[in-house]
Structure formats: structure tokens, C-alpha cells
Image (tube, rainbow, N blue to C red; front, side):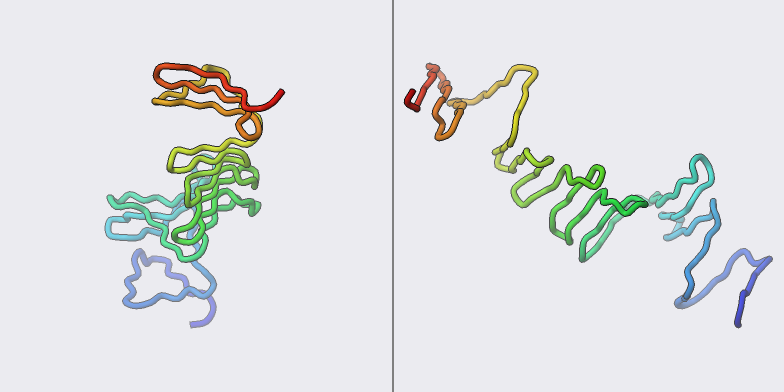
Length: 168
């Protein structure tokens, strides 16, 4: 059959085998592509509200995205919003195309100056401002300041020390 084949009174088409749509599939607004027994998943565009588009999962299991390469989430202008690197790599979140958060093999990085590792170690680069008290609680506590830890504040369970290791 060449040209356009239109079925006016057909409500269901039952096909056994593969269906090939060489120029794509068109569904008008408020119509959906339904998948699974009981329509467990639907893809549709709705004219209600702000012409939203949806991938709706209603089944009991999870919605999985299985991929071998990178999985990218971009806005309509092509700006990066999220990046999932390979099946086992980093996860990155973006704001205005600028990376703000990423996971690493050791923990997480936030912006350009905060690194938190899974062993509890944290590194903060740049100026840090605290608007409330800072509490360091455990057996022996030390706060080191300056190159080569020139000034240190040390608190153990029975004593407190202020130590100047530099020469003045």
C-alpha cells in the first residue's frame, strides 16, 4: 500500500510480530502510548494545564533506566541538567550548565570547594563562615591553623591546650 492508509472505524488493531514505523509514530495530545498488561506505563502529552508531557509508571515495580554509556538529562536548549556516567560511574547535577554536585569513588564533591569522603573526612576550600557554634565532640579534639599547623587548639578529656608551634 502506498500513500496514507486511514482506518476510520477501527478501534483495535491486533498485530502478531514486528511493526515498523519508518517515519515515526504520531499520537495527538491527550492520547497515550501504553505499555504492559494493565497499562503499567504510559507516555503521553496532555493539553490540561501547561501542555505537560509525562512518562507515568503505575505498576508495582521500579522504573529502571538500563544503559551502557552515559545517561544525560538536558533541557530544551541542550544545557546539561544531570549526567550519569556509564553504568557504574559518577553522578553529576548541574545548575545553569555549571556542575554543582558530583559523586566520586571516595564520596561527594559540592561546588568547587567542598569534598566529603565516606570515611568521614571533609575538605573545604575557601572562606568558611559559621553563624552558630562549632562543636567537635569525641575523645581527643584538635583544631589546627596555619601552614604546618603553626597554631593548634587541643582538648582531651582532662585538659585544654593552646599551642604555638611557630616562631614569632
